[in-house]
Length: 127
Image 1 (cartoon, helix red, strand yellow):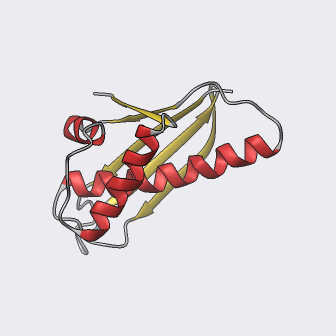
Image 2: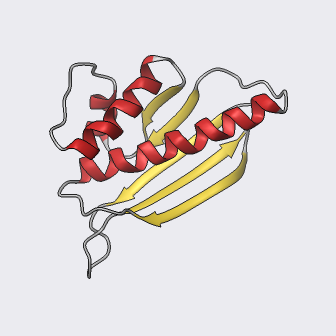
């Protein structure tokens, strides 16, 4: 089985609260099996921060999916492909010495970097 994940964050999309919105779509082979859309719990000051919060949520979701598939005895082919539309996010998620200053963004960044470093996910840019 091949897992493909599409992740996006609508930075400050809610005009009243200015909270970002996370959107995640997970495909197993070519069939969409999980669709997730929810407002983020904190107001982010940048698109970059809201993308990291969305990516952390996606990593947690497909980690749980991979665990379930392994428990059923279903093999997973290689790393999970994760696609997002923020080029700076893709670049910084693959640089080990990049740092973030806000605590919740740093936690999200480290969670994503851990998955990239262990070759669980492969992040790619989609225009």
